Length: 192
Image (cartoon, rainbow, N blue to C red; front, side):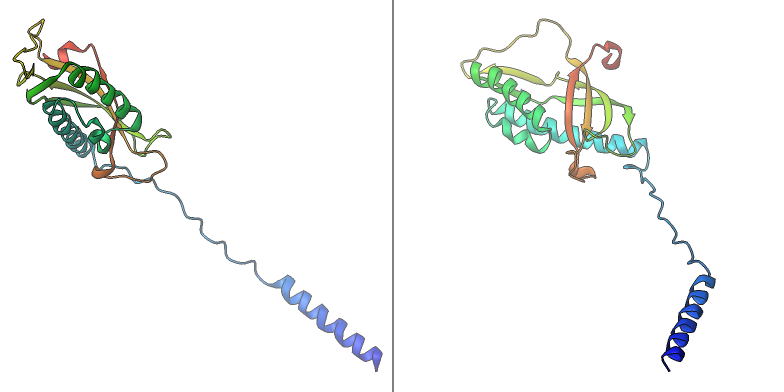
């Protein structure tokens, strides 16, 4: 009887092994391919976003300068933390320290796309533009009547501006972009 039971178990194990060994391999599971959707449909959309972000930044900066440079931290919604520190220091060392106020507004025009990335880089940057700031409609003065006079007739100044998102935030879209850097450049023809 024991011999029959052992033989039966051996036969069952052998048939299972043959069945398992003879079955077809499982169908391969399709691997998902990562497609990178560009941040913008085209260059014009990127320029539209850059123009909106820079316009909002200038509007706030114009307001702060009209109030004597106080409250530079209000630029935090428009610039990176590093640029915020530099902007706040600039406002305080000129407008606050010297008691100056601006009337009128600085505007921007002639924006040109210099670099556009499909996805944010490791540092969060997504695009670089050049533009002109026009200061022709602005006057800087103190409450005692002293008005700052220009040394030249130049009222248009070229800048290179880098825009991005906070690295790792996953924030993309018009409301999530910030100015990462804003550097004066020597491209006189840009603002001709």
